[in-house]
Length: 119
Image (cartoon, one colour):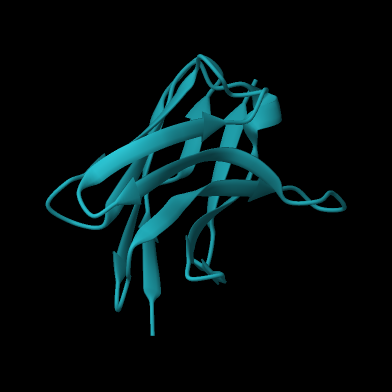
């Protein structure tokens, strides 16, 4: 069973930075995608960023339009851990952020971590 453990998040002023981490454990085979999605009350969950890997090799990264150029996703090659560096944060970035892993047609989700950006 794949498990995801998230860390990071919290309260920050507009213009500030935060870093989220997500560590995966369990059986992961072949190509897999890890990333972050976010959700605010009453809205659908939206893509923040994903990174697709095969073993220790990164194949590609993908960003939502609203965060492109401000957020950077990366991974630790030695571990199945991904990081989301969030810079130039805006109040509209306030949301619950969820880590996701997609492997062998199965979606796994973390418990979510709150990011709040004050104006």
